[in-house]
Image 1 (spheres, one colour):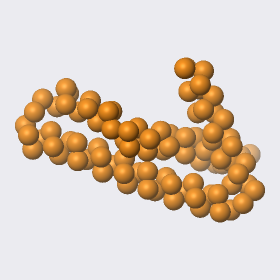
Image 2 (cartoon, rainbow, N blue to C red):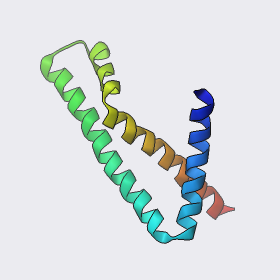
Image 3 (cartoon, rainbow, N blue to C red):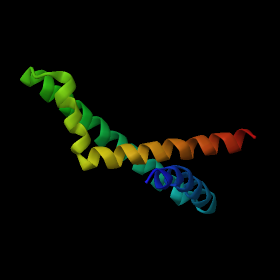
Length: 95
């Protein structure tokens, strides 16, 4: 499982890099996906924190329920891959 995660976090950003070099539309799609993911990710996080504050519950035990939300995990995962993809672009363009 760890090998899969490591390979995914390296291979997917590299594939994204080469796809955006082929067609500019891929770059636009990846950027729009990142914007939508950031909005969803932030919304889920802020709503979860708000509910904890509103209910006056123990913060550290209840906040971990956010990790059970598949949308939170998917959008966070995409943002992680997208950041590596953008770092590859910055590194290649500066070289």
